Amino acid sequence: MKLSREEVLHIAKLARIELREEEIEKFREQLSEILNFVEKLNELDTEGIDPKFSVVPPENVLREDIPGLSLPREKTFMNAPETDGEFFIVPKVVKK
Amino acid sequence: MEFEAVIGLEVHAQLLTKTKIFCSCKNEFGAPPNTNVCPVCLGMPGSLPVLNKRAVEYAVKAALALNCKINRYSVFARKHYFYPDLPKAYQITQYELPFAEHGWVEIEKSDGTKKRIRIRRIHMEEDAGKTIHGEGFDENSYVDLNRAGTPLIEIVSEPDISTPEEARLYMQKLRDILVWIGVNDGNLEEGSLRCDANVSIRPKGSKEFGTRTEIKNVNSFRFIQKALEYEIQRQIEVVKSGGEVVQETRLFDSAKGITKTMRTKEEAEDYRYFPEPDLPPLIIDDEWLESIRESLPELPDQVKERFVEEFKITPYDASILVRERALADFFEKAAKAYSGEAKRVANIIISDYLGILNEEKFSVEESPVKPEQMAQLLELVDKDVISIRVAKEEVLPEMVKTGKSPKEIVEAKGLVQISDESALKEIIKKVLANNEKAVKQYKEGNEKQKQKAVKFLIGQVMKETRGKANPKLLNQLIPQVLDEEG
Ligand SMILES: [Zn+2]
Image (cartoon, rainbow over all chains, first blue to last red; front, side):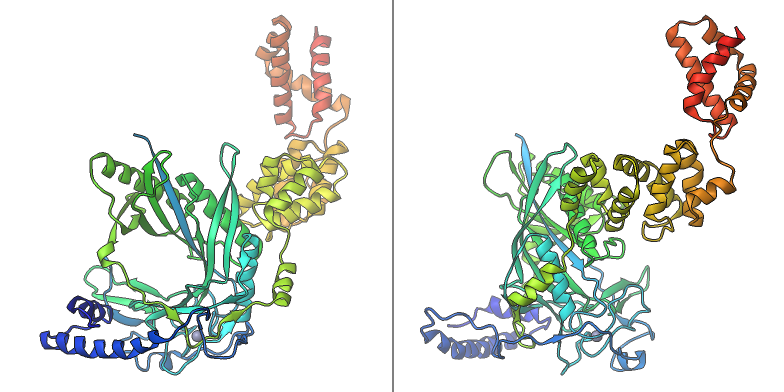
């Protein structure tokens, strides 16, 4: 099984990355290899076995609804590329 | 050809927990931007979500009130998309296995007919942050992540809704129930309750579905109805002119009252859902479910029925009284404290008290008037101490303003009804002297004109006495004085 060129471009678009022409073919190969490897799982007969949604023990892990400490703004914005001290500033994202 | 619409709504409701769904940051509206945030809701690497127990309880409470079946085993999932106010670049939600399914609510249309709208599913999820877009030449957007991680339930209806009116009623009904059980504050302006509508049209009577469009983020009851009215008409015109409805997402422009394309199917998102590995599946066992069920109050429709039955008030009045839990409680207590018919309590609340509260900008809860005082007020009328007009126009507003008892107000303001015959006769004579025309009408007119004249004169005496004259006595005294005068 090999991914189509369109599928690679679709995945790139979803990941918001731009691919150069030669990269399209390269990732087409690599992604297909990964899929083929995982494809092995489909050889197993899973008839009558419920899908497993989690590998942790089936037990609730819950928090009481009690407020804790939030971060001070200096910390919150420490890694922000741009801020005015109140907001995270990003390029305008208005959808038309 | 005649067309009919097929509408389904997705309603997002914020839950009134103290903290967010997966972290202990405060869940509050209006805090300074980016002050209720932590590594979890900022999507910092290495942080882990932990589910808020009360969020689950509120969600289940809502689902029970909406007649849903609770799934004992449900699973959180990641929904992927990029937007600056979604720090993890995925939203934690539920997908294949939501915690609740197969519910319904009943709406009552303006013609009195009832209709059941089925609910397909309810799932839990986290809200995103808020983005404010710079205006004019400002090429920035500003992101506030206080709202990121607010617990939400998304209530997805079946496409059982056929008109914009039904859509509005359904949304109002959801709001009334969620506010009543205390899981949502019902504040649409602040975004506590938001609605996306799916709508398509088809020839009347057809079983097939047409191509649907989705209208995003309609945030008032009026706008839901307006947006749908516009969109249905738009689709009908497309089809009538030989075109085809395109599957797309549309935005409602409330200023212009129209919907416009936001994105088409080709640009539709591909969310790549998968089970959230950071959270175990949610298990709701019998014991937990029962304890939540026990915490559920009597619901508005049940209370309404009981009011009609127990207090002999009209279904219409009952439906107004159960619009709000505090109001229903107030009525019930006042009706029980009152020695007369509960109907009169319902009357004064609906036609006078609510209006006064509105004027004074008080909610029922904020009002200082106690239910027992409302009963006392009506009893003063019953005992002929004050007229009903004085009760409504003078005493009740003062009760709302000052919180004083009706008796205190009546005494302090000298509002006791004038039932002294000779005093009333004096006033009547004075009024007659000033209203020769009515007197003439009484003396020369037929029976009907006579009655009219008396009625007019009663009004004049009431005016003169600022409503304090005993109306029953006036009815008898005015003709008497007129006849005596010859
Ligand atoms: Zn947080």
